[in-house]
Image 1: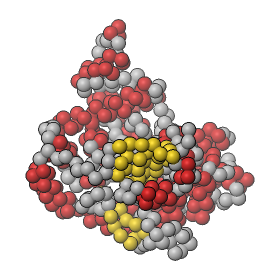
Image 2: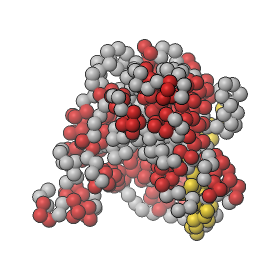
Image 3: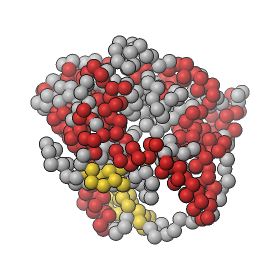
Image 4: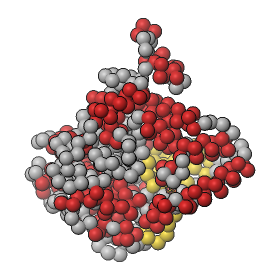
Length: 487
Ligand code: SF4
């Protein structure tokens, strides 16, 4: 098929020819369609998605990404370059007075929340330096210790990441406005004006993971990823993986195209990011993530490929017990989540609320400042007229968790059979630094959660009783046909 984009204009949808946009960056695509369809909002893929990179993503506003799981390649495989939406309709609201009242109440809570100002002023990258040393960030392709191998993190401070910020903004009408845009790069890297301030995950992927202390290089790598439409978590991780292969002589300058891919060589990191985004040379080998790259390279490269089910992990080390993760079975989450490694994924009852909040289109940052599930229930009732208790909202989250999981099971992916790299769980444990001696008890977490979810401990199948309780009767019939209907 010919490349196309989907234009939705006041509810009328039409596929239009996108041949002239094919090969263009996400920035150019968005600018072109916005100017052609005044007032339209645009999501698009870049050349990485067109070339079916399994770590490609969908971008809007030059840096907001549907980043994980290779969604760019899904659009690319359908030759769908972009979606542009324009509309003047009003959102119907069931009880406008109730919405106004709730808005005032929650605004007051959010504006007083301790996290609010930090997020507004410095963004999520504010703790990049601290995380590199606390054990929160994985270091050196998950195999290093920040305080030992990256002792100087002064280049990763919130002041440095924010030095070039020109304006702070956010999602529509958000009182936090946690994003920032930068002035044009005038130093070693000439990224364009409007490049987005990096988020924590990007900073950790191209920072501690690559033993890099140069923020400008991280901003440039992030800009390249946004421009070509690549997920920064996976891109930084696959570059760190390649650096480790280079250290061990599994790849050499012959493979890298003369790039000296040593740990901490930020110039090499940026150069390889561009190759990866364009699928050139070794970049073509790396462009589908660490699992595929290890299979292509061979020579024992798989030993250094840290992923779960083929996806690179979000950059909070599950061995730690960090704010926001306290009490949560995070390493089990990484393994058992239907899209493993998603920063916002979940596994087990402690994540039902997160899943429901995600599905409601609400923000997980705001969720940390208010009672998120109640917030979702309150606004759902006021906006739609559906009265749902907090318990019912959590039940929605449980239903979502089951449906995501059931999709994977149907496709033959039993998460209990996924291999988890020892560096993720600490097997063997690190011998120095904040995580010295720590091994996450993955099995205990997994089995506890399987019991709580009422999923089988071998097949991972949800019980018939659970499926019926969640109203998933059709799936219950399919999964437990009458002759084996014993649960
Ligand atoms: S809704 Fe969330 S992500 Fe968006 S600007 Fe507000 S705090 Fe940031």
